[in-house]
Image (cartoon, rainbow, N blue to C red; front, side, top):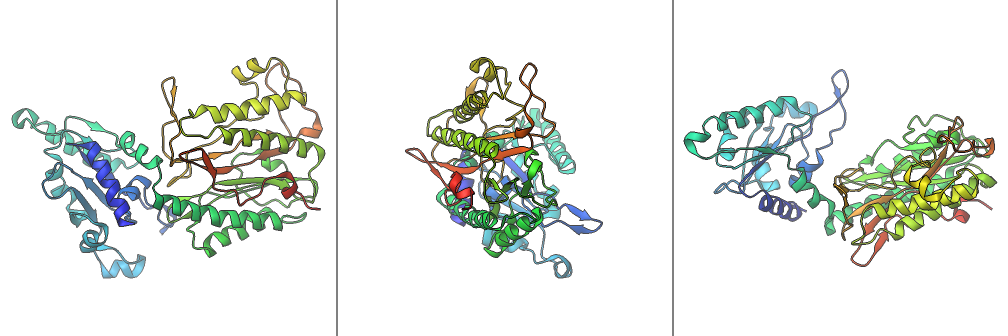
Length: 436
């Protein structure tokens, strides 16, 4: 895997040219008082280094004669390691992670200047760490004050995202291997949930068994807070309380993914709590499934991003019009987004190191096109809350449709010739959702 990180760094440094990039590790987060959450590295930092500790800085200076990749890390400290775990340390940062040079993090202010003073710009994301923002800004201002005398130095600060994020979007063979593992674990967990669901079961029972399996199979745990939503809870897009007892005649929406070696899966399935869908649930389920299949067809290399969402929207609007839940001119309903009370979110997002992964979808009026190696979720839905309010001028929704929320989500890899549904091991045909 270190060869992958080295290749990524080389690609990145080729693109930043005479600049210097400075990346800060993720901070630790406190759960309560003096107990920290499990550490999760910043995705950009991890993508280029594989280094999985806090209090670190990575510097990329392709113009430097000898030190093009430099790490500043926590030094070894036996006393602190006794309390909070082993550290890589300065020497191993070079040996294990391929840094040309490594220093204790305490030496950052002293050593950083040499890697920036001859750069034409600094690539740094001004964001969440205000203290470190000041470190970078103060260095930049100090070097700018001598620019007219020396004629060299960084004249601008740019965000590295526009360079780094397109690299992250196209997955390497090693990345896809990890994503397939994350998918396989989550698929097994979803199939277990499908078997477990029954009237009287609590939402948290499903969550517990799925997340147990995530860990049991070697995953890092849930990729995001698991959604196990029965009854009207399925109409809440990010419902995570998971405390309710399921009842016969309801549906259960499960949106859960596994994180494996920092890469993620994201799967949603909806099925009856009992043996069969009600007539209304079945009709809406078929409509969402049809919309999803039509959307997946549009995930093709060269196709612009908006096509798969447009396909899902059109299918859902046509279906809702056929049911009398929307009325009017089809094109007008779509243009004026009168369908949004039923389907208020996009049809998918990029997937990778982050669940909602980086990547531009649109520049101005131009939609970005799919490329081989990208992974996207496809997840249309229909949600009719008990207190549903239609778009102005649209018909009221009869009670028999209220309280139904349905979403179907798969992870789809763009290939050279089309696409591959990575999550195909989790069934979604209506016959598989119901019991005899």
